[in-house]
Every structure is written in C-alpha cells, then in structure tokens.
Image (cartoon, rainbow, N blue to C red; front, side, top):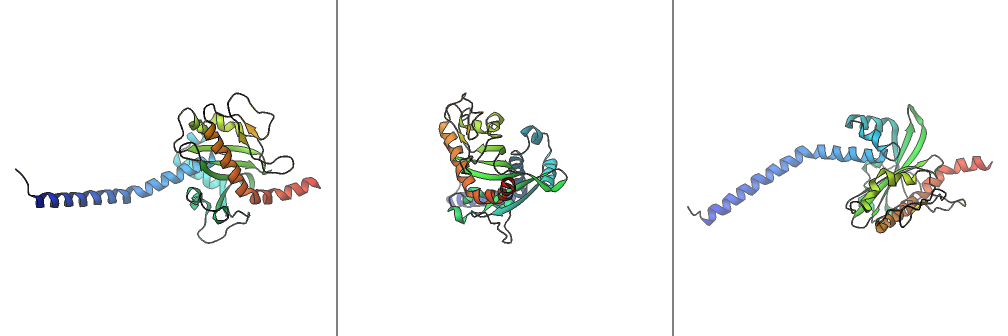
Length: 252
C-alpha cells in the first residue's frame, strides 16, 4: 500500500531522532573508555622511549598505568626553557598536534621525566614529544635523552598514514634502535640533532649524528629529520639549562 508523503516525512523524522538518541547515548557511554584507551596508548608511547616494546607488550593496562605513575613525572615549559606553572596546565593535557601550527613562542612543551625504580629523586632520562609531517600525513614520536642531555637513550616513532613497508617502517624497533647512543649536540655545543640518511645499508656507527635511512622512504625520513630538528630546537633552552651544571662541574 502506498504511503502518503506526510507519513513518510514523519516516519523519517522519528527514525532520525531515535537513531540520533542512540548514537548520542553510545557516545556518552563509550566516551570515557575511548579517552582511557587514548591515554593508555600515549603512556605506552612515552614509555617506549625508555623501555623495550616487549616489556610494554607483556604488561596489562593496569600494570602500564602503575609503572607510569611510579616512574614518570612531568612538567611543561615554554620555548625559553622556563616552566609553565599556570593552574590547569599539565604535560598529559598538552596536545602538541593542535599546537603544531602555532608560532613556537606560543606553544606549551611537555617534558616527561623517567626516574630510577624506587628512587623518585634520581632521574634516568628526559623524554620529549615531537610532531611533524611525513609523506602522506602526520608523524610523531618521543625522544629520550640521557642525563647528559645529549645522548639519545631511545626513541618511539609513529605515523598516521605512511606507506606500508616503506615510510611506515619508522615504527619498527630495528629502525628506532639506530638512534640509540647518537648525540644531538656536536663537539662545539651546536645543536645538530641526528639525521636519517638517504638509502639503506651504509651504516653510520662512527658518526654520532647520522643513522641509516629506509629504502624507498626518503620523504618520510626527511620528515623525521625535520621533526627532530624543529622540536629539539624548541626544547634547546630547557635542555641546555638542565645540562649546564654538569658542564660547569666537568670544566672545573
């Protein structure tokens, strides 16, 4: 039986309202779980700069949260290296992806501090978030510096849409391990960071500022280079402020 136009319009409107309410209700119910999952993933990426992926994979979500709480503290600084103490500002809440296009002096920069087990006053590493552009979409990561504020202790890299088998290899431990032990400052104290080279298989074990590239992924590699250079530059004042006392003692 053919329905009237009025019936069809009313039916469609009621169906739309019901579906809208169901979707809204689902969002309200699932929202907190989604936020918890996002926060957990972020903690894993931060910890990935200082402990192995295998260790993290072996942990339950509860263990990850407990480990993070016991070993990580944080602060937020500006581009001059000064801590931001404004109420409500915390490293965990800073979204560097949203701040990415702001002028450097207008951004807030999170710093995550990794402490020795059972020794909250003893720092083992400083972890710095980074964000940039790959071949197709965003790339990001976390770089850990040893307490000399020069030697890379570890790095995690991630991407939104790099090519599988090519640029997407930045997530592989084999690629990330190439950065361990490299230096971000040269012997004169200039910030040069570490540059991924074009091509693969050459090895740069004797060069403190170069790592092997990824075959067929030069643009992604350049994106990683630009990201490291930009964010280590943004954190440079803080890094040097933290390393100055050690440098003075060494000079004496």
